[in-house]
Length: 185
Image (cartoon, rainbow, N blue to C red; front, side, top):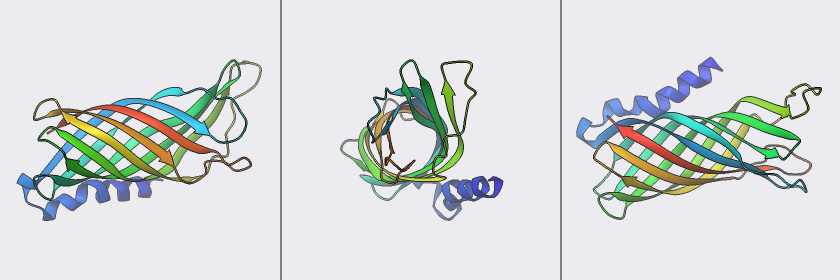
C-alpha cells in the first residue's frame, strides 16, 4: 500500500518538473461527498462524508488544461435504521478542463480508485462491524464545473459515475456527488 501511495504521488505531482512554472498550478482541496451505492433492490440513502487531497493543473492553452488529483475519499451508503457502509479510497481523477470563461470551467475525465478500507457499521450495537468485501479497484467517470472565486480560491461541483462494480450479486456501483473548496498556491 505504501508503494502505491508513493507511486501515485509521483504520478500526480512529479510530472511538473519538466514543465515551465508559469504553466503549472499546485493546490489542495477538500469537500463534501454525497455518496450512494446503486444497484440491487435495497433502499439506500446518501452517505454524507468527505474528500481531501491535492492537485496539479497543467495549462495547455488559455482555454484548456489537465488536472490530475490525488484524493482520499469516503464513499458508500446508508440504510436507514440498519447500517452504514463506508468504503474509503485513494482516488486519482485526471480531469480535462475547458474554460468557458476566465473563471468558469467545464471538467470531465476518468478516475482510478484503490480501496484503503471498507466497513459495514450496524446501528444495533450488538452486531459487530464487518468488512464489506468491496472490490480493491474502482473505475469511474467524472463530469463537473469549476469556478474561480479569486485567483487562488475556487469551488467545484462534480459527479462521479462508477463504471466497475464495488460488489457483485447484485452488481453494485458507486455514485458520488462532490462539492469542493480549493486553494491554488
